[in-house]
Image 1 (spheres, rainbow, N blue to C red):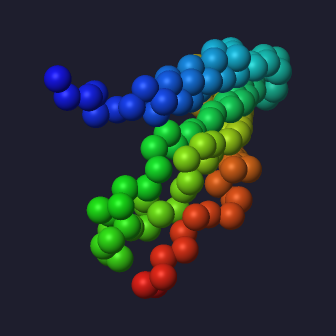
Image 2: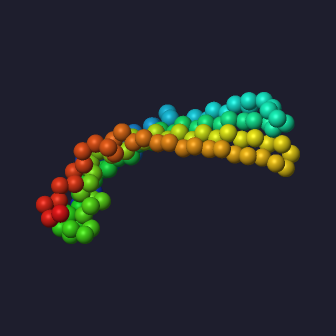
Image 3: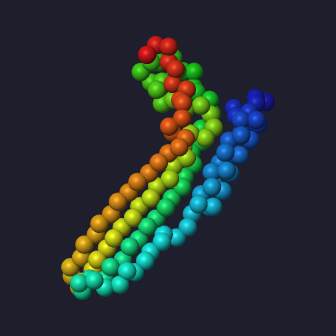
Length: 126
């Protein structure tokens, strides 16, 4: 009988990374913060803010077949196995309503600490 194509060590590492990512999603998930600011000029004013944290991890090393093609290797060569994304997103929205009239002002910002680290993109051909 042939061996399973995924070795038990790699399979265990993959399960551990997926479990870590699932735990991180549960820990960082939460309700959006919303605040009714009252009435101004006849408009009911509301301010909503959502903060989201996310993690991304590479579970497999670079594929040698993709690394051999200089036109197809950038995405595979750029990240080592392990954590490659630690992103924080903030979305805020100010809403005003008065009957059939309303307005909405929103802003979004994000930062990814892990993505800005040194990459493994060291292609000798490019």
